[in-house]
Length: 168
Length: 152
Image 1 (cartoon, helix red, strand yellow):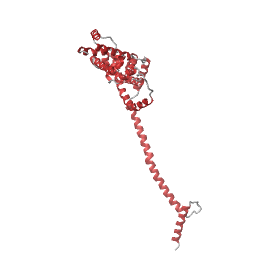
Image 2 (image 1 turned 30 degrees about the vertical axis):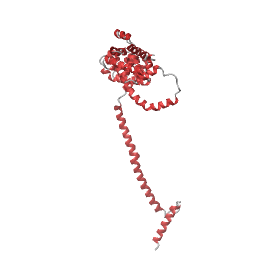
Image 3 (image 1 turned 90 degrees about the vertical axis):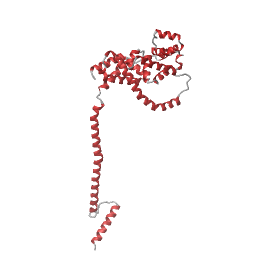
């Protein structure tokens, strides 16, 4: 690990750190998982700092690492959750109070977003939650701007179908 | 949704909460299906607004943690001497615990056999020694046998 790499990471923590945590939080839905994913991204960025050719694109380069770390973190967490889901569901159902109201829209949306395929989830979170531009997103997701738009469209169609009452 | 919509719906979804291009906005004004898509996209954007976000100090702390973790040597380097030491310790424990104990066991057996011989030799000489009844009975029988052999 070089001094330059450490300086780069310090700069990224100030420049893109809070955004990275926000993206990871919306993609994973859990703060500690999000922080683990961001730490993993910082470690990977430290190791790969030599491969960054254009320092001006460091932010997008780092966000790309964050999105990929979220994918890895999700795979690990999903295996763990699947094993405990059945037991947890049975316990919740056994102890749940009868409720008249639906869960808040925000919670339902968060849950629906996390059920989207990885690329659609990342595209939706980057655009709708954090307002990244299409060109910036193309760098982060590693694809053409047209593909980014098509991916967002697929995510929006699925979410509207799932949350039928969102426009009311 | 008409045929024209196919060209606009991707732009409407991709715009998110942002402004639409003039041409797209014009279409949205005249097409109910595309207007519904635009309203749906805006509703999704409203419901997705970021809540409480982490501050830069939290991000700096995570980056520092990552730097500390990256400074640690890779597991392969420090694990080699550790594994070698563990293997040596295991070999020593096996040697002393298994083979050495067996050797001790056979030596102990030899001493026990010697003691048996000694007792049988001593018994006729030293009758004052306090012995359990069973051993005394055996030794008496032995003595009787010896007497018979001596007496013609």
